[in-house]
Length: 224
Image 1 (cartoon, rainbow, N blue to C red):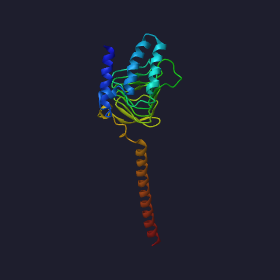
Image 2: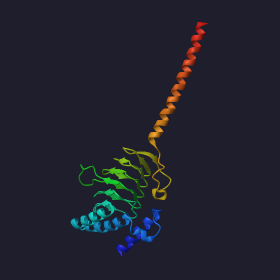
Image 3: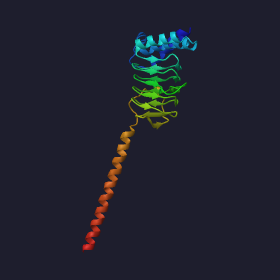
């Protein structure tokens, strides 16, 4: 019954979040579907300390799908991995419910820590294509990580993070990430800073011209 329940759950998640899937049969070809069924089996073996068999299942799945999930990772329900090629999820990673990962995402460790080495994702987190989340800290519930971002520190609940290194550019988005599945319309902090510098430069130029005009008037008055 557990296998059938997992199968139905994975099929539902994929159909809901990928508009490119047009039939139930296509779901069975989907890398996320295959790797998550394999992960659930491998994770059970890992918890029973059958480490070799667990890693054998996970490595087979990685070769077939391009998605590497360590069997020790703790993953909640409703994880969706879109496309998936190049996704890496480390051993001590914890992922909450209803999260979404895109291709090229890494949930990794720094290589220096012992024990808990990988990130913890809360519920309803979206990590966009190519993003890297490195270290043993938490990404809060309802967060979005922008494409190509590198996140190295804790992110508060409801935040949007972009950049290298990642920084928070929006708080408390009104919609959950899986409601939008939007990797594009994020604030651009670099462009905003450039626009601010442009306005400040224009204001400074205006003040200089006003000063020069006032100086010319005083000089002309003194000459007379």
